[in-house]
Image (cartoon, rainbow over all chains, first blue to last red; front, top):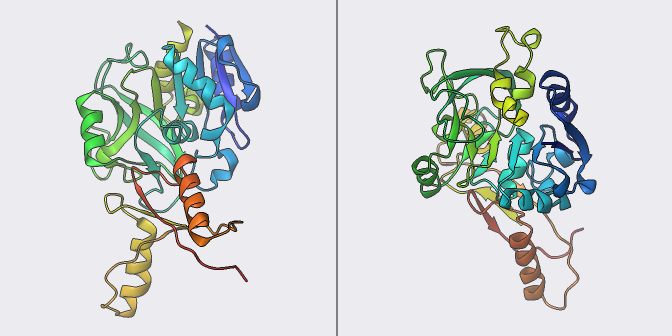
Length: 229
Length: 81
């Protein structure tokens, strides 16, 4: 299965994820310019982090109108896997492939730090190898990552088991102190009802080699290794 | 076009302006501040109503605001100087 890493103007984590896929996981992966992307050549796609189109108007909204998104929608309807990391998550939300919105952090600051996220469900292709309630170390780096949805939307997410990751404290508990950006219900990552589209604010590609982690672990690989299959 | 957060979505920028600028001056009659985004469109149209309808249409179709969290107000402002 070949994975596409889609590059938009302003993507800046594209080469990081490509490196992890090719050189750490040894999976077939290719960097594709968004206007050249054709879904039929790939079994999975990653929308990487960055600042597509300078985050103008609203992070992710301009990239959501790229022709690549039509191809992504085609992949999603065929049941192929799509992962949006950080700005990629924002693009998926603005493409309406995932529900809700990602707004300015409650602190109004850009936040770059390591956080702990808890795996809320193993009932997705992305987390099926990770035991539920496992706590993963991954860094975040964003200004607009506060997940917001209306009460009905939030209820649906929980009822359908679509919340995949929540920010937690070192004991693995959800708390106000461990919520870095003010996200509703400390949500760090969600999937679509069909469970083949994942969006998350933390960067698994920056947590995939022990040498890059203050914890000397590679928790990001636990998630990304699903692309090996 | 003015885009601002619905009440369900907190507005940290507006809250900071209210708390750190206005409240600190001891002004108690301003109860809250909401920040937003402002876009001015120059539209070629026969009538104001026509211009308004066109901008409303693109706001919805191009998702210039996110209907889950934003309210969007569109007004005729006259020509920009």
